[in-house]
Amino acid sequence: MTLVQRSSLNSIPAYKQGATPGAAEKAFKLSSNENPYPPLDSVVAQLASELGAINQYPNAAAPELVGALSARLGVDPDTIALGAGSVEVAGQLIHATTNPGDEVVFAWRSFEAYPILTHVAGATPVMVPLDPNGGHDLAAMAEAITERTALVFICNPNNPTGTVVDSAAVDAFMARVPAHVLVVIDEAYVHFNTAAGSAIGLDFFRRYPNVAVLHTFSKAYGLAGLRIGYAVAPPEVAANLRKTAVPFGVTALAQRAAVLSLEHEDELQVRIDELVAGREALLATLRDAGIKVTDSQANFIWLSTGADTGTVDVALRAAGIWARAFPGEGIRISIGSAEANEAIATAVITALQEAPAHV
Ligand SMILES: Cc1ncc(COP(=O)(O)O)c(C=O)c1O
Image (cartoon, rainbow, N blue to C red):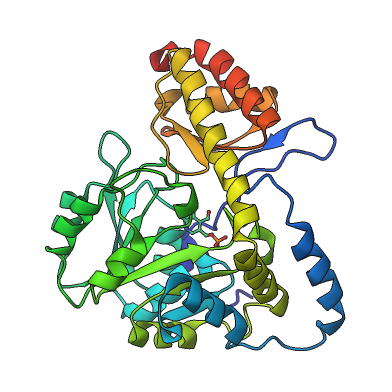
């Protein structure tokens, strides 16, 4: 007997996780933009001491973390809504703002989860092609807004191309967005963004009543495995985000680790600076070798390998580089340790000699 299932799920792909090399292989996993540094010793020690309390539910209101974020960011506590990773909060935002069939506008290619989360919520994705340089085409995105549009995602820096949107361009975009449409600036990679003139989400949140910002502890703060992220949103939106959240989705350990990370931001900044320096050095090495590579403001680089993507990916894997390939489009490679970055440079330069269109 066939069980009754929601038929629309048949056409929705499952979220595809970045590939992981086998345990025996000497390889670098650079497919999920994870932080190559281990968690801070102070975080590990504190979490270990709290393991004895996991028989209890967390405090869903997370007052300590919300208080710390509110002080750190200079925003009211009632504008902060937490989730088990910012991907959960992105889903909450769609559930909180769309009625069935309403439209969610975002650039494409961008974060893999946007179309999936939109379909799952019963809304309709409107995917606006990136410009030829891999950046958001904000004019085309403004054109794509209709009376059915409820939400717009701007991914800054964009995953997977690493491009950023200019502050003035976002102001021009906002002038064309109806006041009832919420614009979410997804800043999963904001800590790695050193571009002068880039839009900064909180600045827009402060200046526009219809802007929300998404942040995560997964990338720069190295807590991907604990799953914690948050939105800063207009209070009425944040209240609805709490309604659409999975109850107790954010564990006490995740809350604790996030608070400790905020207390140790100086230590984490040293690592962020090293990752940014690693990115810039890698981009320079590749360019010196004649390779065309997009400027990136995130903890990854993007190679527009187009039709050669499959071949290049196979060659990178053979050299121990497990990146994220988007067939027919390009390859995203996370910045890793100094050793990994050297291996990336060698592998990419070698692999692209076989694909001279990109050299
Ligand atoms: C643009 C963007 N937003 C959100 C996320 C979600 O991160 P997390 O759920 O770990 O906070 C990611 C993860 O890759 C991302 O690339």
